[in-house]
Every structure is written in structure tokens, then in C-alpha cells.
Length: 535
Image 1: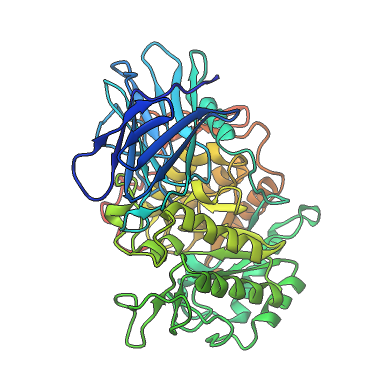
Image 2 (image 1 turned 30 degrees about the horizontal axis):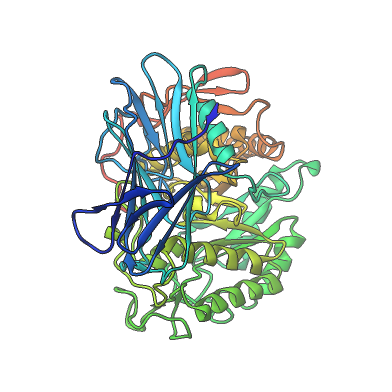
């Protein structure tokens, strides 16, 4: 059950990069340290946290002296995508648990806490045998934020304590309490994406229409229209392109006519783009080009500027005018902060870039970016890849929950796709529609393993995208696609799916699928590949 989160036992603040914080003094109006005042108040949704500061401010830590019992296992989330590293493990004080944490105790039952979606800070937890700490990173990129007296709504904390709950059900309950306004697709999401067999090379309109035909033939007449998503490689710049997006289409002569042809083939057209990168200097560009961007250069846009957001919005309006019904936006975290955010770090140490506007936190700037994308997309479906899920919930319909699967190395699909599906499935339908990434059909990866992943993803009711090399389209593969399409179009199996051995492995093999237990063998005949170069 959800319980009232008590006031913290201590509050600490960092104004800059100092190693040792200042302990704030408790008073009638919160906790004060110099020009910093942190407040906490019980609200209808949880414990509301806010801060005011006259000068620079980097971090705040709230400490609760509530020890976890010895023998507990702890689970957290990921800053953006999971990278095959989500797992239950004993409390490790140095392990940062982004956004929420859940703990099982030896005597049974579940405890945990999290922050509601779209907070004003990057919020991570640490747990130890003496207590729990909530870290609130309020930096603006690599710099301290300068609020100039403005009150920043930091986060709303929700706590859970249930002696009878099972961990998977408890995590679903907690996620539901953390988001009251999920943005969900009108119908289950199924379709094709050409990345994991084409990898951005050598495809044209005829290849895209062939993909549309493959997924359309997999659907029954009453299953609705699948998506056909054109991934990276359609625009100038190849596999790591940037804008401007309204010209330079490589092998495509007219992107609007391609969308119309996809629709004529019985599918809904979708398009990938990288919103915060431009091959030309435009208003809102950062002063320096992206490292290793090639001889012509490519400039990241600074999403803290209104000029950059205007460029992003105009690109999306162009795609909508062409007729694309799904907008997949990618690389926005990397291009905004200069790094992918791994789970174990608080964001700023791995995020060296600075924003022009240091009066707002990184979290606030990213939320504004996602809201810009959502508003410009109109009635199109928004799929976020490399977005911060806890900040994007309510602003995107579909969220890529893990790092790339692969049409080249099965090990990436096992390590990334299975892990992300198992440990972030509880967010499906509560934050957004979960996307564990595409199921490839290629000669480089074994179909008997890909087929298992396809069956599980479709049965879960999460977004189900396939990436089918036409050279692999045997009658067996076609039959498997038809079964998966029927499952996906119906929203998955009745009762859903649940990982059963997820407390003992990061890639669960035993799953409850509807009313039965199934065991999946994810390993290659020799075990696993130890190298994961490329995708």
C-alpha cells in the first residue's frame, strides 16, 4: 500500500562542486543553509519538495534514517534507456537508483519510494543498511543552476510499504502512483522498422514499400493498420544525420509521396529524426561542432534556447505536412548534454556541456524539449528514443526502454532487449507504451532465438516492431509474424506477462504468459558472446 512519506531526518546542500555539503538547519519554514531554503509539505499526491536559492545551487540530499533489513534485495530504474544493467541486488551504498527504488525484505513484503514524473531535478536514490538518501541534482548541464530566488518545484515523493505485495505487482502499483496522466497510443503499436537489417544503407522507396507489404500481410483484415517506420539513413548525412530535414533526401525524391505510398500499401507511415543536430549553423546552435562529425561538421542545438526549440518544432510540422503519422525522435539526451546517461552516475559528471540558460535545471530544459515535440506532433504518435523516460512520461506515446537490440549480434538483443522488457514492463500503460526495441530477422542472428523474443514482446502488449531482411522471409518467418501481429493487435495475451525469475538474473528465462508459465532459452549453443562492439 502507498504510505505517507515522512519528513527527512536531515537535509544537505551543495552550492557548487565542493566535495563536502553544508548541513541545512531545520526550522519552522523548512531547512535553511545560507541563501538556500528547502521545503517539504505533505500533499494529496505525496511529499512535495521545493527549494529557493539566491546564489548557485548544484545538489540537495535528503536523508531518512530508515535502515533496510539485512538480506534485502533492491531494484532501481534507469536515467534514460536501460543498458542491460537493471537487476535486483543487495543494497550497495554507492549504487545510484534513478527515479525510484523497491526493496524486498527477507521476511516478505516490499518497501520503496519514487518521485512523480516530470520533476524539476534529476532524482536518484541510494540505499544502505543505515538508511535511504534522495539526491536531487539541480544543475543546468555542467553548471550550478541560478534560481535568483525563484522557487523550484523539485519533486513529489511517493512511498510504498506492503507486507503482502509481490514485487512485480508492487512496482506496477508504484509506477501508477508516479504518473496520473500517461499519454498512450489509441491502439496497440505494431509495425516495421528498417534499421536492424538496412542499418541506414542502400534502401530507397521500393525497399520501404516492401517492408510495408511484409507487415501488412502479417495483419488480419480487422487488426488495423501497422506502422512502417523509416529509420536513419533517409536524409543527407547518412546514418548519423542532422537537419535541415526538408531537403537532401539521398535516394528519396519526395518524402511526402513516400508517405502516401506507404498509406496506399495499408500502413501508417513513420519517420525517424535527430532533433538536436544540424549540418548547418542555425539559430540555437552550440558554438562548436560535434566531435567526429566529419569534414562538413554538425552542430548540436542548445534546447535551453527558444531558437533551438523553434527549429525542432518546425521540423516536426514539416513531417506532419508530408503525412507521417509516427515521429521517432532520437539522440536528444546525447545531443542535449553531451553524453549517454548510464545508470550508475548522477547526470552532471557524465554531462559536460553547458546551457545558455543557467536559470533552469537540466530536467526542466528536457521537459520543455519533450513538450515542444509533443505539441508540434499534433495527432501523430510520438516515439522517444534516448529520451529520459521519467521526464518524458505524459509527453510521448511510446518510449524506447532499452539500448539497441541487433540484427548483427544476438547477444545485444538478449542483453539489452530482454533485460529492458523485464525490468521496465511495469511502466507499460502507466507511463507510456513500452518499446523494448525491434525484433530482427537477419541471416546474422538465429531466428529460433529472435522468434522467442518476438513472441514475448507481442504477448506483453508492448510496442512490437520487426526489422525483416527480405532475404530471410521464409514461410516459417511469415507464419511467426502473423501470430505475433495477431497478439500485438489484440493488446497482448489476457492477463499480460510477468518475469518470474527476475530477482535472480538480469535476463529472465521463466515468464508467466497469460495463465501459463513458459521458459525461454536465450543462450547461444556456446553460452553468450563476450563482445558487444557495434549494434
